View 1 (cartoon, rainbow, N blue to C red):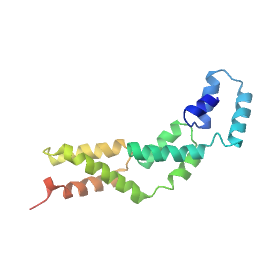
View 2: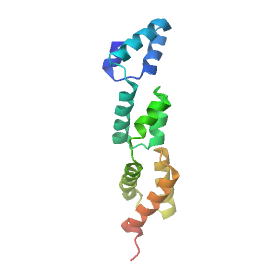
View 3: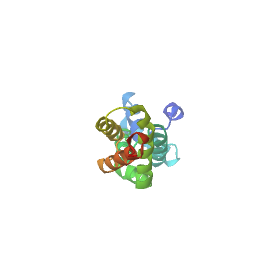
View 4: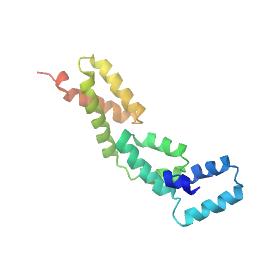
Length: 150
């Protein structure tokens, strides 16, 4: 159990699954996990905060994608909402803009509709809502030198 925690932080649900795989008595597992939570070795809120920071920096995921990934890690919806409410919509939009700006040079020379489709697909895969994705893609393409009007 402690080896699981030393390798990387884990949620309570992940540790429960690990103990169940080892056929640990559910009552014993619950007591051990309660004690680990009590002393601060298992903290789903801290895990969620660390996870969100990491995934935003490395993969630039939007709130909805982060929420889905937290759910798969066993973080309850209330904890996930609490952590994700700390992220501003403006920061999420700016992150989407940065993704689009970084990708536009790779799409140089392609038809504008193809560029729009690929950029919107990129943002959709990262979990950005269509309201943000559409606006960001069109605004950033309009700013790109290739699409500026003389």
